[in-house]
Amino acid sequence: MLQTDWEGGFFPLTLHFSEDYPSKPPKCKFPPGFFHPNVYPSGTVCLSILNEDSGWRPAITVKQILVGIQDLLDQPNPADPAQTEGYHLFIQVAFPHFLR
Image (cartoon, rainbow, N blue to C red; front, top):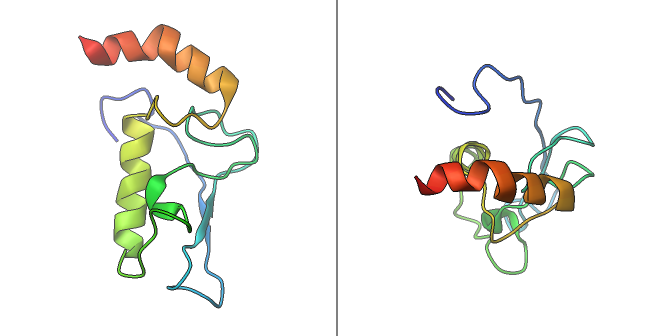
């Protein structure tokens, strides 16, 4: 990820595939406390394609999941915040930059 706020960072991500995969999505988590508006304080990624009830389809590939997470890191989704502090900071500081 070049020329972003995340450039040069190290992002340890764990994907856990249950026995129900691909009927159910994998659980995708960063370490607890990972600071991003679309990552819950527990580290769980808030991404529509990982939502078992609405966005997940068994045809979604691991590559699509990883690209989706990479895109989310590069371009946070202010419409779907997962943590209050990260969301407010993004709206106050980073979001106006994206609008330029």
